[in-house]
Length: 233
Image (tube, rainbow, N blue to C red; front, side, top):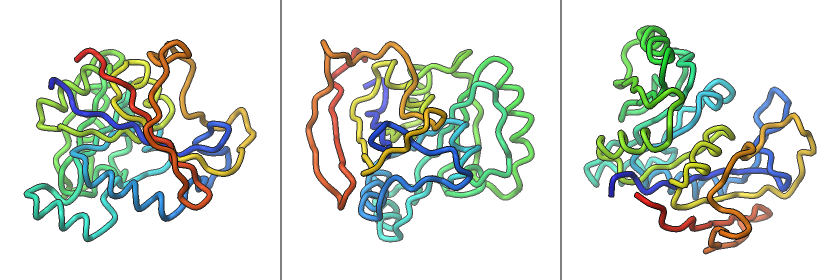
């Protein structure tokens, strides 16, 4: 295999919004779903988000459960995943928790002038911090280049966690193997709120649908899991 098995995971409202326009982060899931996502993270080698997610949420992207971290350590792995961010501009805050936490390091994929910008800004990450690599993945970065580089780093299983631009990048590339959606039992009803995906040319259409392999309830949250089929590798 020349790329990692790629899982895209997202929580959204019934009308496909992944947040609202309020300053506070909208809670779209419940504790049972959070626990399942933690388990999913622990089974993967790397976790990927877009720069917009870093700016909006300042996530750490760590495995929450001590039991799961210990299990990874017993398997000879780092307690947490390799963290990955995609940015076209390279404009990232060196003080973001993404860079200062975890034990597996981070990779920044960018391109064009973004490479120099990221190199300059990330030279100011407060010490000590896990290692951070800046990689030219095209201008703009492509999913294929990102996945090829991750495979070269030994990543066999990748979890993609948003936001909408990153979802669109990967789903329009045809390089996602599995899609996990957690659907909250409400509507956001705001056309300015961020969406699960953007307009684009998708591989899965009414003529070529995804395959639903699981549908179940976690409390009032619906969990849907799709297989996207074997694409050319």
